[in-house]
Image 1 (cartoon, rainbow over the protein chains, first blue to last red):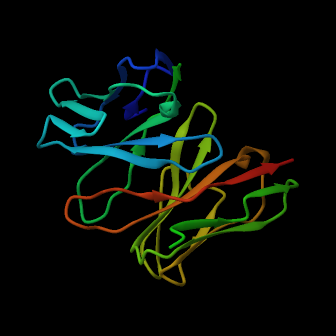
Image 2: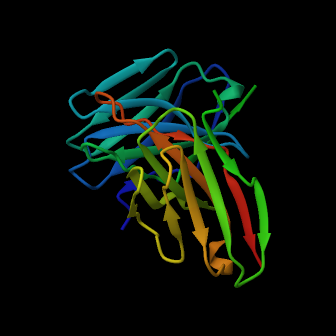
Length: 113
Length: 114
């Protein structure tokens, strides 16, 4: 049973517009969420995170929103740029002294000029 | 500061052969992880280690063994490779600090088992 779900395998957006990537989770014990970005032939790189005590976290063009009651989070990229074209993974963790992450299957974002 | 490095980058094995993937990190991180990524499957945790000399099973540990003899290295072994182990393998490391759960990933090893 998938605990972290990214239901959209792909998303196409025009440059300058907003990209919204969605993620749902089923495990109510998750209390920390991360977004990773992955280019082909490279390892994932950390993008932004949010703790369950917050409902929004912003870093430049990237904002993550968390709706705990709906067990849903989203990543907003504004404005989108062609260099943002990559696969985006949502990940979740149960807080503890160490962390193992549960990843979604990823959403491929294509930003066209 | 190289971060997380993985050796080799590519490998082709025949069914039944064995091999070891090496992961090294120079960030003095306590925790290290091995994941595999398959098309349409995201990243799945194979094994992880919370410190030198300790290892634990992740979501998909069968067919793999690991060792963490030195803090900076985490080895992933395949004793008898199977075609189902064809995948891209990623190593990651992290260090507990405040509320940071960020893991740093290596560039990956692409393994094909024929």
